[in-house]
Image 1: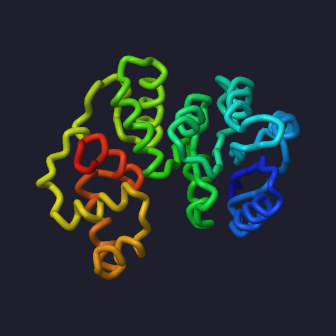
Image 2: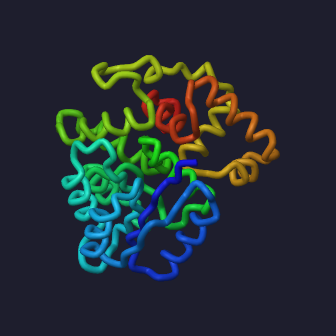
Length: 245
């Protein structure tokens, strides 16, 4: 079995140890190196060339966004380039857009559940973006508000390609961008809105006074109707089509 080689660049000891412990529980993942600052981290990545680098945005010697830009510039065009998963407490628009503009492949919050972090690593390794729905909302809103700006357009295309929102980057509008609201039931629209807000199945069940099993059924129906592979993809398509606000 081919293992996903992961490197950690995180200055907070407890956070780094927690991430390492969580990822090492999976046989498919191998932690190949750790660093506590950007300078050591870049040297480590150049030497080890891991599949995925988990990078803290708030490193002591250099911003994680700038480090991401350097990582991408040194591996630009290489077939086996290291993919970058940003880990942060910052979900403000400026930080999110700056991270993706620098070339980040995925963006996770530090309060992410371990199971979701493992899934984020898998998705990133496979060449796709793992983006919290709330973060996807920030990026899409920025792209919609500023369509003439080339850097925003490029950012939007990148995310569309990575999470398969668009089947082709050359088309200005795809069929899934014009989803009719009547394709979803009123309850499914309520569930979809909570998915976009980043709620778990348990939270959705609590808010709508239904069982978790019923939520799972609604989610499955939503994914089928939106032709989405996962919740993040469904959230982005819903935002693009105007199904939710």
